[in-house]
Length: 278
Image 1 (cartoon, rainbow, N blue to C red):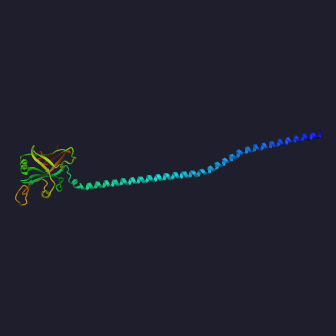
Image 2: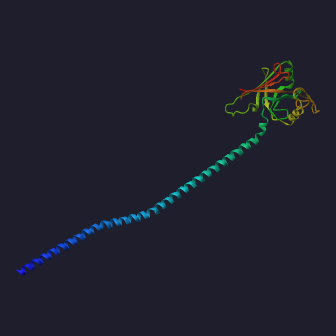
Image 3: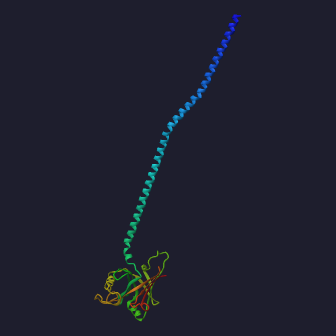
């Protein structure tokens, strides 16, 4: 009996010891399981810390790169704008130079332009043709000089008999570039309604300048200038002239009129000249 009781008590002690050891083992396992998430969380936290530590560097690098790109773009825009500005300045200077050059070439034409009051001179040798010259003033170059096929002696007779109307007509050419009316080279001539041949535009020459220089002090009047002493012919001998102020009226780019102004400003003008492009 005593032996059996000892065996039973030893078995119970064994089972209790085994149970305690099992419970301790299970408790350690639970503790290890509970600690493993903490370790994982600690690992994640460390990773997050590492990432959070690394992110500022990356963001700084990206921001510096973006700033560099923006600066390069701004520099490119500034360079392109400055180049465009220099190009525009060069073009403007070139245009200004061309305008000044053209102005210098045509300066004489601007100086010879006619206003609403002009000086008109009718002159020619006794046996020669009539010349008409219109000047801006008595000292300027003639802006319009034309030679008529009419003898000056015949025109003097017409003027002695009454009023004289001279019409100069030229053709309008559609293909031709429109120019000033006084620049037309050839005209058909009509004197008081009668056809009197053709008139031709002339360039001022030495003889014409000499005649206009001789009558420069005369504002209005008529007379005879002495010849050069040679035998009288169509291009030599005494020179008849008539000088007066004319009123210029522009109807359109194809019509102009010159009316001789009377000293007393009464009555119709004794001489009228019409330029027409038809």
